[in-house]
Image (cartoon, rainbow, N blue to C red; front, top):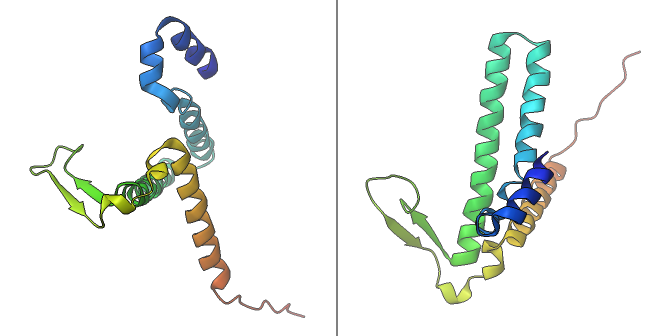
Length: 138
């Protein structure tokens, strides 16, 4: 359904399709998230489902914010504060000169690179922890 909608928008509203880019296909991700939430809710009570939903939303928000923060820092050399959000101030925190920024990180492939790097870092941290020995009881 999402693919059909995406093709329809490409065919009849090219400018809209160009501006939306990859965001229409990302609706499929939303369906996966909602399917998982529905599956959990059908097997558990209301309170557990609400806690699970809040935990999932918080984890997803933190993960996507971390990816965005890393992309912004590496791709631009700065962090924009209050630029897109309705904050009472607007400023840019310059971390290093933009001459040293790697601009591929602010493009869509840069997101995949950052996600891969973050997955590798978290896997390395997880592997560095000492493993507990499990002793079988007789």
